[in-house]
Image (tube, rainbow, N blue to C red; front, side, top):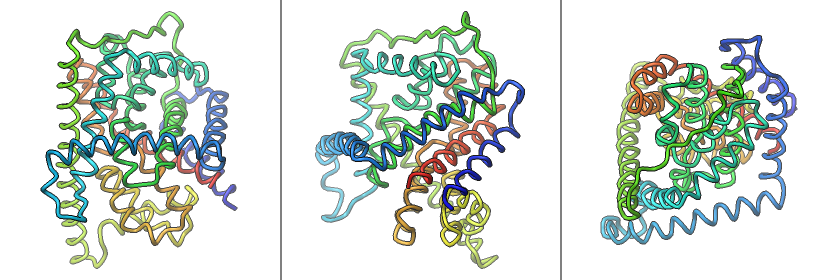
Length: 393
């Protein structure tokens, strides 16, 4: 039965992407089928084999160690603020982002990260039927962040037509950056975080290939990466430390606002209608939860968490998932966890369009115009990844 529902889920995702397509006649079927097969194989490898579990264990172990190192710095500065046995979210989950940001900066400075991003990007371009720039951008977004990635390709932003610009922005919204992965792993199982990272990379190409199909001419398929500004090692360290702290503070501020707003709206709806706003959203999103392989008995609660992620952000949704984890089956928990690992929410529209606008005002305005379409496609990517995982769980 789960395979039938998964097939229906795939058809719904592809159908919804097809309805939004801007050039249906040029959709390339072969790369899409190939990438779906790769997604299924990789999810089965990561979740159902000893090798995959060992790889995830190693990957998660690295982040556990990094979080321990980060904890030393956080404890030195904020150690006396928390009572014994307490675990403040900002201190234990968000502040370690600062240390992860520093490591990314060092790898950038030593030219290790650009080399890896270029190599993987070129390999992916042979599979997805897209350009080298699009493939690089997807990998780079997952490593350095959805706004920072545009700095590395700013030389080419002004030359890109709207369709290629859409694909770049879609990749940035569909993935998550490595600086935040450690924070996710403290909230949901690491194996689902790793699996989602891999699946979303291919899912972004699949959905973009349907919604926004095009062919890049070989002479236009040039990858020019903007080198970092000439600065000393310690200047770079200071910059990335501050950038990491800004991310932590911004995420913390958004959580305060969104969690408080959601509590107020829920209370208002309960007073007026006798049902919370999240419950209403749960019923609206329940059909999508069902095609992702979640049973009817759990679909409404799961739909509420999915909707929370869309209208607020993934952190708020993960916090809600942690509260309801005991009410879900292990399989449902895995499917929802994979769905939550992406930047597909309304606030990302402003973040991405603002990042592009800061580098090229004209192109930033173009991005703002197709912002809702970006969110639509990125949400389909999350649904697609969840459907793929439902096949192997």
